[in-house]
Image (tube, rainbow, N blue to C red):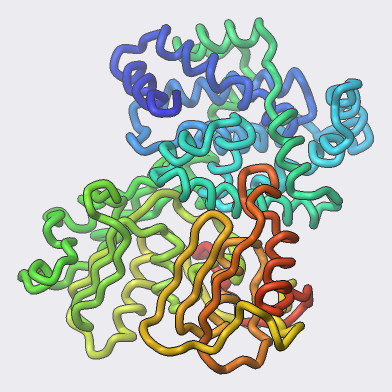
Length: 500
């Protein structure tokens, strides 16, 4: 189903097919209406927001790129429309809103967990970066399989599993800061069960016909559409700003880089990463980041290759990898402070400018990120929640000093093996794959080690990712190591939107 969303959008854009648009409405209106209802707390206003969103879709259908994740686009547009609607109409008093939420969601079968989550869910979702929000929407709001999530986000099923797990952990943490005292598994269950409710049948018919024809029923909806389009045009959160030849171009809510305005003659052959191609002459003075033209299935993989200081090539990289490379910082965003959404999707990078030293490549990459995406980063010390990896037992059966030889990792379902590597690498592995907190190595162990760590895969949280408690017990029993919660001051990468 996910794979043909954009097929329907393109069909509607080309032929104004009411049938195609009606299919899109039937498929996505429940999510849009439910999100609007939570954001506004007003049933009538939520219906107007939903109509406005699909009117906007009808108007912008021809501008959406083929890699658009329509679920994410609609959700983001709903947030703008709801925000503008609430500017036009005084927000209800907090006690009235709470009373409405209770009457709406406090049916006998409604879990008490949802009553905690619903009032703060939209705020927590807004705090996620775009890629994580798309993962949560697809997996839990629309209850897609991991294979479907992977297909929509351009990654494998295993990659989707990791992305969804990390995104759920981040959502759980955001909800926790808002006072929701529930486990991640219960959050996932409540969101999957209650986040999307059926829209009124009359609204489905109204939106399908009127939005497809581009006609608003009331002056307030017309005003709402205009206001939302203004927000979408000027907000920096979901757009890519491209500065070239003195012209500032603003793309739509999907991350679309107008690469032809930056480099009109870039060829895919310039991005080849095999040894022969790296010797191939490529034009000088190129500095570009573009949506990837390569997929893992065609051998593109993910590369970050410097053949010398005057040439750098990256293929099919997540934006986090490019940003981390530019600022020489950990790819794991548990050590990042994000005040702006990161662009979704994978990207290619090419740098062929003549520079004096290797650090100039990173400086140029930072500058390109600023020009194309309006994002800048800086490193600073901040106090944050962490996990300290410490030695609990010195005679653990599986932790053995390395016998030498090559270095290597190996992992699978319920197992992790290490050959001739320091414990600091284990800390990094744990940080990147099993929680949303930085893991600091405080074992004091300086040697390299060999070990095989296994844990029970039969005890998993919702979403098929390892139960952290089970993993902690395996670390203790087999390696004699423990993870201790703490709060420490560590170096963080602060990523912000450029202030114009």
